[in-house]
Length: 481
Image (cartoon, rainbow, N blue to C red):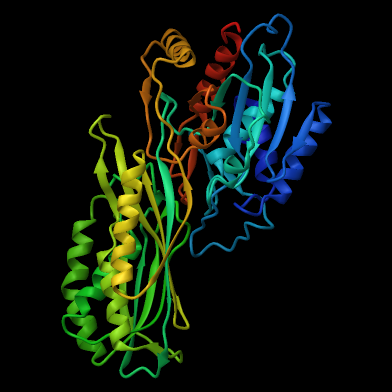
């Protein structure tokens, strides 16, 4: 079945057009031009602000002029992850999609339903001629996935809407009214190189499912960087290790799925045998239920590259073993909500240059810095440099707001069940936008998406139909000014 034949056709049509345009974070020039042209071709007032956000305005339909004005908001960029055996260039190619039962997926890459389905939905409202709605401002932000610089660069006074509907939530029975803030923690150092003193061993971790470093951080998924660190640390008990290279993980907001290290040890065969029969076996058993695809390969190898000294290698391994990863604290106020966490997202060692990328999240600002400062303390003890950047605030819930009550009522009447009014551990742009628009009521919701930020990402077709129906009903019943 073609995507153009599934309902709601207008959304899947626009999603297909959007997914034909490359849109990696921080490289959104093509998709900015695409959305700008879309608005202009509809004859609607369209502007691009100085950071690249696109704002398209559409007047109220007949009889809706006295209703509160609405901002519909989604982000243009997408997380670019692919399976290691897939040849794909996110900067030049459009996403290749397929239908699998009730799901739309991509072929070996992220799908971009986060937040492309939100973008496509807003496009569908803008081009519609038969959907009642108040005055609309469509806000398409950039770079949500790697810094939220679009939301951070949005200036006061650019928007006049009284209610913001953020279409970036991934469970169709949830109405999201709060989220975590975040901060990037980057650890770096440069080391001298020398000839390796022993035999070369290659350690490879692969087959993990990965996932969203906020929404999935509590699920016990494997982190390839942490598993690699455990193996290296265990090896130190018997061997002096020289690190040659490490390449683990990718983006800060994705739980890393793969990692590989090339090292030098004095007795490779004994080292491999001890790890294979010891910790490797234990880790595979430990993750058998949640990570059935996990593979750990430890084998003899070759390398012509120089290595880091045994002393410096030990410091790096000890730091990797010490960095907090996963849930740091559960919320004492909201049941089952992760309050604070850290994702050890990327470890790169090449030519003596080390980079470790972390994303620390929390709905409590002081704890966001508490976990970030713990990482900083560990790294500085080993003589490494630490930089904090990209800090953004959380979004404080307002469960009694008028729009939340309206949406709860509509959902319950329409779907004969009670929605879950929640806060999430992901970073949504609402908190940042709210800093400049404190009087604006905000809610986030969306269709069901699974595996966001990984090549397993998929969007549920019946859920998209439900979401579209829900949104149209909300727009038709927005309260009067």
